[in-house]
Image (tube, rainbow, N blue to C red; front, side, top):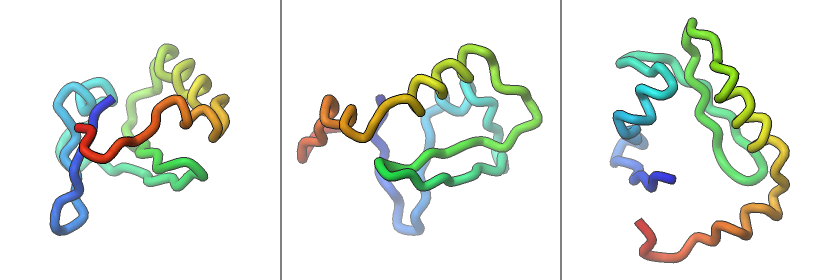
Length: 78
């Protein structure tokens, strides 16, 4: 898990390992999906989703909002 800070213009900088994992290059369009428990960023690339990432996404989608209680946010966590 990575914590990010939103810049003055609302921008965020994704770590290199995240950009590489999802095939995100400069100017890659990203879809922002608002969910009940947070925000999902989906890169809109021409590369197909790997089976591993598809399985991981299925696992995340299966989690209920109650599962987030396992990861409480504490002021000062970084």
